[in-house]
Length: 108
Image (cartoon, rainbow, N blue to C red; front, side, top):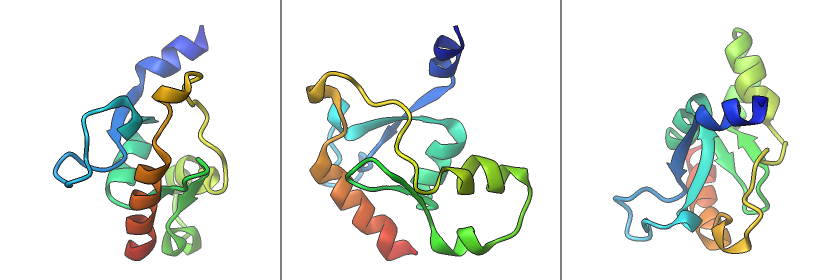
């Protein structure tokens, strides 16, 4: 029951934005993220490595702030994505993840 409720709160986030030349409209260019993580991903505060492990930008890891930053963002650093499609063809594309992760690393 809680799983279905969690799915309703998920956003479809593009790995590589539509405006980018590599930004394709396909399931493999997508991630299911909550609204907070989606916004953090789009603003390059949160990155996802090609092995599906979450990273938070280093400067934010050093910040002291309220519970939102501590638990919702910093608490995810180093953890694998919670939900990945079982069907291999629907999983995030490794090459697209590599491209976006490089952008995330360059922003930090």
